[in-house]
Length: 291
Image (cartoon, rainbow, N blue to C red; front, side, top):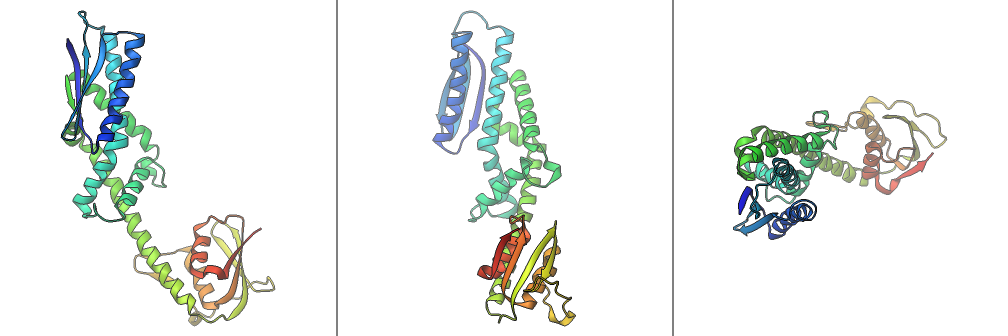
Protein backbone atom coordinates (compact mmCIF):
# COMPACT_ATOMS: atom_id res chain seq x y z
CA UNK A 1 0.00 0.00 0.00
CA UNK A 2 1.32 3.43 -0.98
CA UNK A 3 0.55 6.67 0.85
CA UNK A 4 0.24 9.50 -1.66
CA UNK A 5 -0.24 12.33 0.84
CA UNK A 6 -1.57 13.05 4.33
CA UNK A 7 -3.48 16.08 5.58
CA UNK A 8 -3.98 16.97 9.24
CA UNK A 9 -6.07 19.76 10.70
CA UNK A 10 -7.73 20.73 13.95
CA UNK A 11 -11.51 21.00 14.27
CA UNK A 12 -13.67 22.46 17.02
CA UNK A 13 -16.30 19.70 17.01
CA UNK A 14 -16.91 16.13 15.94
CA UNK A 15 -19.53 17.40 13.50
CA UNK A 16 -16.91 19.58 11.79
CA UNK A 17 -14.65 16.52 11.55
CA UNK A 18 -17.47 14.48 10.02
CA UNK A 19 -18.23 17.19 7.46
CA UNK A 20 -14.60 17.35 6.39
CA UNK A 21 -14.29 13.58 6.10
CA UNK A 22 -17.56 13.41 4.15
CA UNK A 23 -16.16 15.85 1.61
CA UNK A 24 -13.04 13.74 1.10
CA UNK A 25 -15.08 10.53 1.05
CA UNK A 26 -17.37 11.88 -1.65
CA UNK A 27 -14.35 12.81 -3.76
CA UNK A 28 -12.80 9.39 -3.16
CA UNK A 29 -15.99 7.69 -4.29
CA UNK A 30 -15.91 9.65 -7.55
CA UNK A 31 -12.34 8.54 -8.27
CA UNK A 32 -12.96 4.90 -7.38
CA UNK A 33 -16.05 4.69 -9.59
CA UNK A 34 -14.78 6.51 -12.62
CA UNK A 35 -11.02 6.03 -12.76
CA UNK A 36 -9.13 3.84 -10.33
CA UNK A 37 -10.56 1.45 -7.71
CA UNK A 38 -7.17 1.32 -5.96
CA UNK A 39 -7.31 4.95 -4.79
CA UNK A 40 -9.09 5.88 -1.57
CA UNK A 41 -9.05 8.16 1.46
CA UNK A 42 -8.59 6.92 5.00
CA UNK A 43 -9.51 8.90 8.09
CA UNK A 44 -8.59 9.28 11.73
CA UNK A 45 -9.93 11.52 14.47
CA UNK A 46 -8.67 12.17 17.97
CA UNK A 47 -8.01 14.99 20.42
CA UNK A 48 -9.69 17.52 18.16
CA UNK A 49 -7.65 16.65 15.08
CA UNK A 50 -8.57 15.02 11.77
CA UNK A 51 -6.13 12.92 9.75
CA UNK A 52 -6.83 12.30 6.07
CA UNK A 53 -4.55 10.00 4.09
CA UNK A 54 -4.83 9.30 0.38
CA UNK A 55 -3.66 5.73 -0.33
CA UNK A 56 -3.18 3.52 -3.34
CA UNK A 57 -3.76 -0.17 -2.56
CA UNK A 58 -2.83 -1.47 -6.00
CA UNK A 59 0.50 -2.83 -7.11
CA UNK A 60 1.07 -0.23 -9.80
CA UNK A 61 1.98 3.40 -9.21
CA UNK A 62 -0.86 5.74 -10.22
CA UNK A 63 -0.25 8.06 -13.14
CA UNK A 64 1.23 11.46 -12.35
CA UNK A 65 -1.83 13.13 -13.87
CA UNK A 66 -4.09 11.16 -11.54
CA UNK A 67 -2.10 12.14 -8.45
CA UNK A 68 -2.08 15.77 -9.58
CA UNK A 69 -5.85 15.69 -9.97
CA UNK A 70 -6.30 14.18 -6.50
CA UNK A 71 -4.09 16.83 -4.94
CA UNK A 72 -5.97 19.57 -6.77
CA UNK A 73 -9.29 18.31 -5.37
CA UNK A 74 -7.74 17.97 -1.92
CA UNK A 75 -6.56 21.60 -2.10
CA UNK A 76 -10.11 22.65 -3.01
CA UNK A 77 -11.49 20.81 0.02
CA UNK A 78 -8.86 22.30 2.33
CA UNK A 79 -9.72 25.76 1.00
CA UNK A 80 -13.41 25.26 1.68
CA UNK A 81 -12.58 23.90 5.14
CA UNK A 82 -10.50 26.99 5.94
CA UNK A 83 -13.11 29.43 4.67
CA UNK A 84 -16.00 27.71 6.41
CA UNK A 85 -14.45 26.39 9.64
CA UNK A 86 -11.08 28.02 10.22
CA UNK A 87 -11.67 31.71 9.51
CA UNK A 88 -14.30 32.24 12.24
CA UNK A 89 -12.04 30.44 14.73
CA UNK A 90 -9.00 32.48 13.71
CA UNK A 91 -11.00 35.71 13.94
CA UNK A 92 -12.22 34.79 17.43
CA UNK A 93 -8.64 34.13 18.50
CA UNK A 94 -7.54 37.49 17.15
CA UNK A 95 -10.49 39.10 18.90
CA UNK A 96 -9.33 37.56 22.17
CA UNK A 97 -5.68 38.44 21.57
CA UNK A 98 -6.08 42.07 20.59
CA UNK A 99 -9.42 43.09 22.09
CA UNK A 100 -10.13 40.59 24.91
CA UNK A 101 -13.70 40.25 23.62
CA UNK A 102 -13.82 36.55 22.75
CA UNK A 103 -16.42 35.90 25.48
CA UNK A 104 -18.38 39.09 24.88
CA UNK A 105 -22.02 38.59 23.87
CA UNK A 106 -21.43 40.56 20.67
CA UNK A 107 -18.34 38.56 19.62
CA UNK A 108 -20.29 36.49 17.02
CA UNK A 109 -21.66 39.72 15.53
CA UNK A 110 -18.16 41.23 15.29
CA UNK A 111 -16.75 38.07 13.69
CA UNK A 112 -19.62 37.96 11.19
CA UNK A 113 -19.00 41.59 10.24
CA UNK A 114 -15.29 40.86 9.79
CA UNK A 115 -16.15 37.98 7.44
CA UNK A 116 -18.46 40.27 5.46
CA UNK A 117 -15.62 42.78 5.13
CA UNK A 118 -13.25 40.01 4.01
CA UNK A 119 -15.79 38.78 1.47
CA UNK A 120 -16.25 42.24 -0.04
CA UNK A 121 -19.86 42.58 1.10
CA UNK A 122 -19.31 46.03 2.61
CA UNK A 123 -18.32 49.42 1.23
CA UNK A 124 -14.61 48.98 2.02
CA UNK A 125 -13.12 49.02 -1.47
CA UNK A 126 -9.86 47.44 -0.32
CA UNK A 127 -11.75 44.19 0.21
CA UNK A 128 -13.86 44.21 -2.96
CA UNK A 129 -13.94 40.72 -4.52
CA UNK A 130 -12.10 39.59 -1.41
CA UNK A 131 -13.65 36.14 -1.19
CA UNK A 132 -12.71 35.07 -4.72
CA UNK A 133 -9.17 36.35 -4.29
CA UNK A 134 -8.78 34.68 -0.91
CA UNK A 135 -10.03 31.35 -2.23
CA UNK A 136 -7.55 31.50 -5.12
CA UNK A 137 -4.63 32.37 -2.84
CA UNK A 138 -5.38 29.69 -0.24
CA UNK A 139 -5.95 27.07 -2.94
CA UNK A 140 -2.64 27.95 -4.62
CA UNK A 141 -0.68 27.73 -1.35
CA UNK A 142 -2.04 24.33 -0.40
CA UNK A 143 -1.81 22.87 -3.88
CA UNK A 144 1.88 23.84 -3.92
CA UNK A 145 2.38 22.35 -0.46
CA UNK A 146 0.66 19.08 -1.40
CA UNK A 147 2.79 18.92 -4.53
CA UNK A 148 6.03 19.57 -2.63
CA UNK A 149 5.43 17.69 0.62
CA UNK A 150 3.96 14.33 1.55
CA UNK A 151 2.31 15.66 4.72
CA UNK A 152 0.54 18.98 5.19
CA UNK A 153 -0.55 20.34 8.58
CA UNK A 154 -3.19 22.96 7.82
CA UNK A 155 -2.79 24.73 11.17
CA UNK A 156 0.99 24.87 10.83
CA UNK A 157 0.77 26.39 7.38
CA UNK A 158 -1.78 29.00 8.48
CA UNK A 159 0.35 29.94 11.50
CA UNK A 160 3.89 29.90 10.12
CA UNK A 161 3.70 29.96 6.33
CA UNK A 162 0.86 32.43 5.66
CA UNK A 163 1.51 35.58 7.76
CA UNK A 164 -0.04 37.82 5.09
CA UNK A 165 -3.30 35.91 5.44
CA UNK A 166 -3.39 36.49 9.21
CA UNK A 167 -2.58 40.16 8.64
CA UNK A 168 -5.57 40.39 6.32
CA UNK A 169 -7.82 38.82 8.95
CA UNK A 170 -6.50 41.29 11.54
CA UNK A 171 -7.12 44.26 9.23
CA UNK A 172 -10.70 43.14 8.62
CA UNK A 173 -11.23 42.59 12.34
CA UNK A 174 -9.94 46.13 13.08
CA UNK A 175 -12.44 47.57 10.62
CA UNK A 176 -15.21 45.41 12.12
CA UNK A 177 -14.33 46.66 15.61
CA UNK A 178 -14.42 50.27 14.42
CA UNK A 179 -17.87 49.67 12.93
CA UNK A 180 -19.04 47.87 16.07
CA UNK A 181 -17.91 50.68 18.40
CA UNK A 182 -19.43 53.36 16.17
CA UNK A 183 -22.71 51.45 16.01
CA UNK A 184 -22.77 51.11 19.80
CA UNK A 185 -22.05 54.80 20.22
CA UNK A 186 -24.69 55.64 17.62
CA UNK A 187 -27.29 53.45 19.37
CA UNK A 188 -26.58 55.08 22.72
CA UNK A 189 -26.82 58.54 21.17
CA UNK A 190 -30.11 57.79 19.43
CA UNK A 191 -31.41 56.38 22.69
CA UNK A 192 -30.64 59.66 24.46
CA UNK A 193 -32.40 61.66 21.75
CA UNK A 194 -35.38 59.32 21.86
CA UNK A 195 -35.61 59.74 25.64
CA UNK A 196 -35.41 63.54 25.27
CA UNK A 197 -38.17 63.63 22.63
CA UNK A 198 -40.52 61.58 24.81
CA UNK A 199 -40.71 64.40 27.35
CA UNK A 200 -41.08 67.24 24.85
CA UNK A 201 -44.36 69.12 24.51
CA UNK A 202 -45.61 69.39 20.94
CA UNK A 203 -45.09 72.87 19.49
CA UNK A 204 -46.58 72.24 16.03
CA UNK A 205 -49.41 69.91 14.96
CA UNK A 206 -47.75 68.54 11.82
CA UNK A 207 -44.57 68.80 9.78
CA UNK A 208 -44.08 67.27 6.35
CA UNK A 209 -40.55 66.02 5.69
CA UNK A 210 -40.10 65.76 1.94
CA UNK A 211 -37.26 63.65 0.56
CA UNK A 212 -36.02 65.53 -2.51
CA UNK A 213 -33.15 63.29 -3.63
CA UNK A 214 -30.07 61.64 -2.20
CA UNK A 215 -29.58 63.12 1.28
CA UNK A 216 -31.55 66.30 0.53
CA UNK A 217 -34.73 66.86 2.57
CA UNK A 218 -37.17 69.73 2.84
CA UNK A 219 -39.23 70.74 5.88
CA UNK A 220 -42.82 71.84 5.13
CA UNK A 221 -45.60 73.01 7.43
CA UNK A 222 -49.10 71.56 7.63
CA UNK A 223 -50.05 73.57 4.52
CA UNK A 224 -47.13 72.04 2.59
CA UNK A 225 -45.32 75.38 2.59
CA UNK A 226 -41.55 75.56 3.23
CA UNK A 227 -40.56 76.35 6.79
CA UNK A 228 -38.24 79.30 7.29
CA UNK A 229 -34.84 78.90 8.92
CA UNK A 230 -34.79 78.33 12.67
CA UNK A 231 -33.32 81.00 14.92
CA UNK A 232 -29.81 80.00 15.88
CA UNK A 233 -30.62 79.87 19.59
CA UNK A 234 -33.69 77.69 19.01
CA UNK A 235 -31.89 74.61 17.80
CA UNK A 236 -30.29 71.58 19.38
CA UNK A 237 -26.87 70.33 18.36
CA UNK A 238 -27.26 66.72 17.32
CA UNK A 239 -23.58 65.85 17.64
CA UNK A 240 -21.31 64.22 20.14
CA UNK A 241 -17.62 63.41 20.44
CA UNK A 242 -16.29 61.26 17.59
CA UNK A 243 -19.75 60.91 16.09
CA UNK A 244 -21.41 63.12 13.51
CA UNK A 245 -24.64 62.38 11.74
CA UNK A 246 -23.44 64.65 8.92
CA UNK A 247 -26.49 65.45 6.77
CA UNK A 248 -28.81 63.94 9.37
CA UNK A 249 -27.86 66.33 12.18
CA UNK A 250 -29.41 69.46 10.67
CA UNK A 251 -32.74 67.78 9.89
CA UNK A 252 -32.95 65.94 13.21
CA UNK A 253 -31.95 69.08 15.12
CA UNK A 254 -34.69 71.04 13.36
CA UNK A 255 -37.32 68.39 14.02
CA UNK A 256 -36.40 68.19 17.70
CA UNK A 257 -36.47 71.98 18.02
CA UNK A 258 -39.82 72.29 16.23
CA UNK A 259 -41.22 69.35 18.24
CA UNK A 260 -44.17 68.47 15.97
CA UNK A 261 -46.99 66.24 17.18
CA UNK A 262 -46.73 64.35 13.88
CA UNK A 263 -44.10 64.01 11.16
CA UNK A 264 -45.21 62.87 7.73
CA UNK A 265 -42.18 61.57 5.79
CA UNK A 266 -42.62 61.66 2.03
CA UNK A 267 -40.15 59.39 0.26
CA UNK A 268 -39.69 56.68 -2.33
CA UNK A 269 -36.68 55.27 -0.47
CA UNK A 270 -37.94 54.24 2.99
CA UNK A 271 -34.84 52.11 3.55
CA UNK A 272 -32.54 55.15 3.93
CA UNK A 273 -30.69 55.30 7.25
CA UNK A 274 -31.75 58.93 7.62
CA UNK A 275 -35.40 57.91 7.63
CA UNK A 276 -34.78 54.96 9.95
CA UNK A 277 -33.03 57.35 12.36
CA UNK A 278 -35.98 59.75 12.42
CA UNK A 279 -38.44 56.89 12.95
CA UNK A 280 -36.30 55.50 15.76
CA UNK A 281 -36.12 58.86 17.54
CA UNK A 282 -39.73 59.99 17.09
CA UNK A 283 -41.46 56.61 17.19
CA UNK A 284 -45.19 56.68 16.40
CA UNK A 285 -45.06 60.41 15.76
CA UNK A 286 -43.21 59.73 12.48
CA UNK A 287 -45.23 58.18 9.65
CA UNK A 288 -44.22 57.17 6.15
CA UNK A 289 -45.93 58.38 3.01
CA UNK A 290 -44.53 56.49 0.01
CA UNK A 291 -45.00 59.13 -2.69
